[in-house]
Amino acid sequence: MLVERVMTGEPLVAVERLSRRHGQTQAVDAVSFTLERGQILGFLGLNGAGKSTTMRMLAGVLAPDAGRILIDGADLLDQPRRAKQAIGYLPEQPPLYQESTVDEQLCYSARLHGLDRAASHRAMAQVKARCGLANVGQRLTGNLSKGYRQRVGIAQALLHDPPVLILDEPTAGLDPVQAREIRALIRELGRERGVILSTHLLPEVQATCSHVQIMQSGRLVFAGALAELQQRRQSACLRIGLNAPPPVVELARLPTITRVENLGGGQFRLHHAAGAAPARALLDQAHVGGWDLWELTPERASLEQIFVELTLGWETAE
Amino acid sequence: MIRVIAARELRGLFLSPLAWTLLAVTEALLAWIFLILVNDFQNARGRLAALEHAPGVTDLVVAPLFRVAAWALLLLAPLLTMRLFSEEQRTGTLDLLLSAPVRASQIVLGKYLGVLTFLLSAVALMALMPLTLMAGATLDGGKLLAGLLGLSLLAASCAAAGLYLSSLTAQPIVAATATFGLLLAFWIVDVGAGRGTASELFGYLSLPRHNDALLLGLVRSEDVAYYLLFSVAFLGLTIRRLDNLRLQG
Image (cartoon, rainbow over all chains, first blue to last red; front, side, top):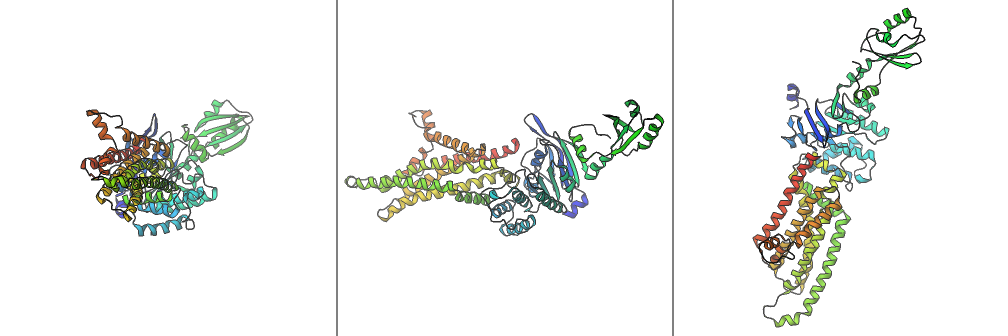
């Protein structure tokens, strides 16, 4: 089956114009994307951007108002059980029964996903070893620390060996060491699966994901490989300091400069097109005009800046 | 799949102190009433012996005991069913069920059968007391079984109503209160009903009235159908509600 799919090039997850309203607000607005095996897709956005709503719809917990979701070739609305069998879902709050032990919880989840008793126990042993839960099998999930609860939640999503993993803020509330462990686990899982994870932490995306999607007010404002996002950093600016600055208009007239910011004290930030190198021309002009240049620093926008620019809807320097 | 969900539900009930407390309290109260009934029967033995076609111990002890047991079910059912869906909505564990490859009907039936099994074991416990009478008296087996059938059908109806109301709210205590109110309304709907077609309707709607004939040993398909329809209606509503939860979010 796998070979067949690779040959036809059908993506593991295909989402077409997915929409969903919550009362008056459009929580998700015509979102489309695809996910291939081996991709780890990071959903990035501020709180309330529509990440969780999208993920809930992917997991079949929430019905979309419009749009289509294909998971492993099965339509989530027409063949919900086939599609759901292919999904492992970790909601924002790991769905754990407080009064169950870890073993009971995992066993129940495995049986719900159609594994028989023997298969459940095999899967449990494997998954517990993988998620570092071997020693807590008899503890009540309600008594576990947040980190362990999160791990049980991930273990639960892995039990039936789904090709698609949907993890809603998998590292929320974890300490840095735990978060690193979980990220390593996700990277490992992403090798043979398709993983979608949501977060509002940029470093997490940089550390784990191969692809990024940034959501803002229910819309996708960026979708592409992580490298593409990083390339945007090149569309950078020059920071200059002049003792005898000319009028700003004159600076803006320099080749390839798109925008000039006056920082005060003779300092300016010159935004220029991606890939352009205006430094040469600037130096010449400074010499000719006698601007007395004392600082010239290329500035790169951090990922953080790009994120803020994208989510606040500013025009990025294209 | 239904069995897996039912087994978890039943296990959860047996692990919770609430269920054990409820069983202990109802059993103690019923035992007290049972003692009073047996005592009354003992005292009336002389007078009964003089009667022709005198009512037996099944009519004078078992039937009144089961009548009280029906009231006990009215209290038990809301408290046992209140957490079924509301707790899962509150803690978010419902997501596990909704994202699993399971039908809504399977989830509903699983939970229903789980709680019903517990309620039926409570009914079985209630039946143990009259069975001890067999040591010194002859019981009317037919009447006893009919009475048990009545209690079981009543339990099935109460559980279905409780299951539905528990799916409507995320607060267990609200679900329990609403279930108790609804069942009580069906309990006393015929109170004050005189004669006439409207009164007949109210009489027909009354939950315990359909149990009266069964307590006399009379199994009428009309009564059995009433309880079954009552249960199926609420189960259907619950399945609808679960599908709606996906739409409403």
